[in-house]
Length: 139
Ligand SMILES: [Zn+2]
Image 1 (spheres, rainbow, N blue to C red):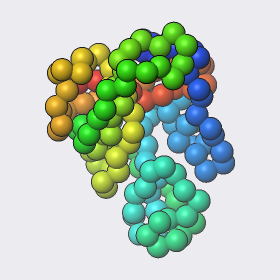
Image 2: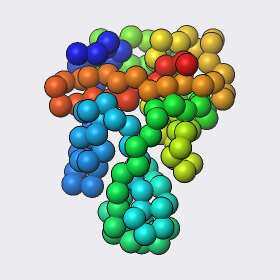
Image 3: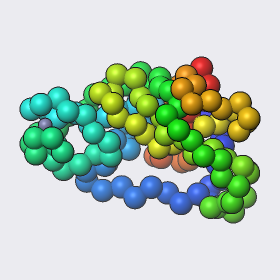
Image 4: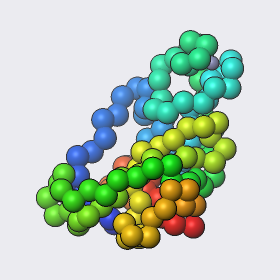
């Protein structure tokens, strides 16, 4: 199991047929983004059709897990019992993703240290044997 940053009481993500492949990749610690097989448009969250050309033909582009902080906020109210405060919610611009940004958490960094544009990399938090959540730490 990985290093833990959030308690088991965190609400789990809702998974459906469209998002299942993304969560399966995450469970293998692979960060991917949905890519249209017709026009190569990338999108997140996963969708049944391409938001650009409406094609239902989709694949998955593997990402490096590198990115930059696009914006962030510091949260001082817990959303789960036993949560360490404050925690940081950040929007991460993902390298090689075609412009996709992912809402996640920054870990191992204090709020005073964060800067817009800070270079980060993904770190996986295993919440269970089948659920891994991407968080980000400073590079
Ligand atoms: Zn498309």
